[in-house]
Image (cartoon, rainbow, N blue to C red):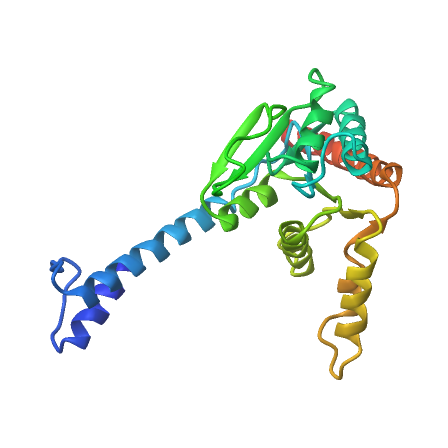
Length: 255
């Protein structure tokens, strides 16, 4: 990619170029081409590296998305903490965005069973919410939402979405889209609470009512909406059973 960028720049100036030609910093167009080509090449390297998957994983990890605004003591906070605690006792690691509100609630719940669970926070650099919440035991920092979302995808075996705002909706739709195009397969996307059925029904009504439809009907069945924390826990418990069975099969195939 870098070589092509240099050649394009040279062609634009009307001369042939070799891969060893030096690009002057005074030639802004050529410099931009080299920089763009280099960045795209780095992305290709990262994309190739993320294709590598372990044959088995030792830990089952659940990402919990949710609002940064709900305070301790609120119903949403205490229910999110209860869900995370139940999953932690089950042996699930808990991953959040590492911030306050329902992210903190989930990390706090995981901290109630430290012998069974690890508590992760995948942060993004913002002009506020500078520090990870006190219940995060393993923190990761990102400068962009795009790389942060990519780590969520690579690290997680299930996604639970609690009530939240624009950021939570963004995360939800990203996971939904990756499941739709099979970049993620067999990963539960569970939407907890009364705010989510309306979003799914809006998508169903709006996308399937046109000719041609804007989505396949089966794509609208990807997110599972539940009204209670206990329903979410049951879905994850069942999925984890299948995950554990697959890990055992992987061990037998290697032995």
